[in-house]
Image (cartoon, rainbow, N blue to C red; front, top):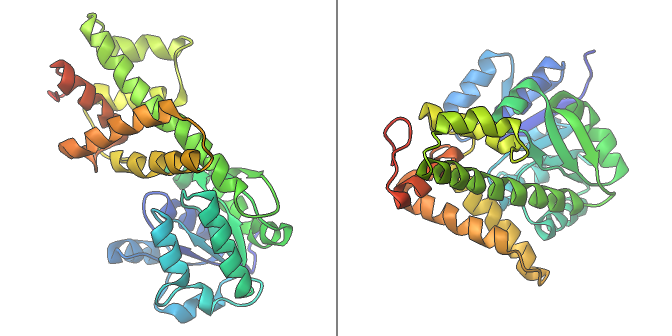
Length: 301
């Protein structure tokens, strides 16, 4: 059913484009903004509208930010030409980047000063789930923020977890998720290459381990990338420097020892330092292979 909700999506990258496209499919009047003009042109070609200036945000009931980090989130909301100064009273920001809970609370407070609602709503599911409108959203915010954002949440997500009536818990839950995924990815790379030292090929690993107790969603999703030698990024190595860095910062602030996070983060730092930063995060296996003198499928070491 077509609704009158108008939405602007800031960030038409691998996940944001799916969010915007699914808002269109749901019948929402949708604008898109991105630093990449080609993405805006693509979106316009599918029936979307391009944000041509800050004034366009005045038309939006919902502004969704799907950018990389806290700095970009703050810039698109409150920087030069930022959305919040243009938004009408009672409109809502849906903030999807992985950020620290304290940052989410600070953004919510600044939005409130401007009469704008804020939903702390990090997302999970990657490019594939974003494209199909089946993301998981870990959200927290005032009931009226959820109500205002509901048509957009319904369009972009299969599951919306409502975690509290103020900003912070959504980002805390995303940090927990990223801790697990970052560690699991590093463990996948270590386990696969460890197997190679014992004569177990990556192909055998992918055939057997997904049927055993040691499997995980990450392993089943990413290990085939290593077998095919295809490191086209669905989620890049450098994402994990940022996300596990956030986890580490939160843990330090809470005086909580997180040794597995620390160990995994060092592997991601090393992989990025070896030039893999923009490759798919399955490339973490290359780091282990290099240190062990092993050759992965496709000739990578």
